Image: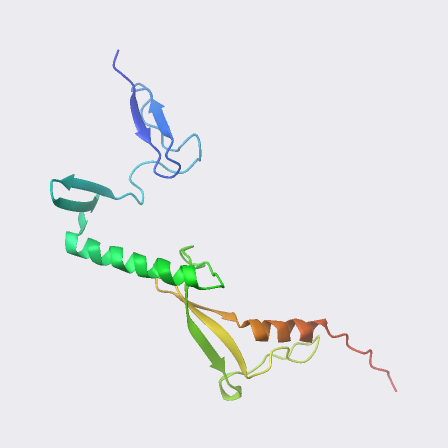
Length: 163
């Protein structure tokens, strides 16, 4: 009888021992994530050489890897200094606040609902976020304009009298 093989889950780091007759597990019994080489990178160290590969071959060179490290460090520094956090809806990475964008009246047409007048009036500001992974851009209303919106929606409308 052969010895049992084992695998380490790349998601939760749990060692998974499987019987050779049954074969390898497809899903981690601990965290239920897919096992295998899905989104996995392999790092090989040969003396002074560093190689980063996936199933299709080398991913980046050593010079590119050091650039990626510097880029990652720069992203972390920016994220640590910002007060507001936003998760990228596309890839779920934390987004970096790039700045503010002021929306003027000639760039904005408010939507008038049947339940009342337009609730967001120009000018207003939005915070612009950039995802450091997929480079998507997303906006969030500035703190001042959030407060203004809350106040606008919180006002009680006086019932109109029919004449």
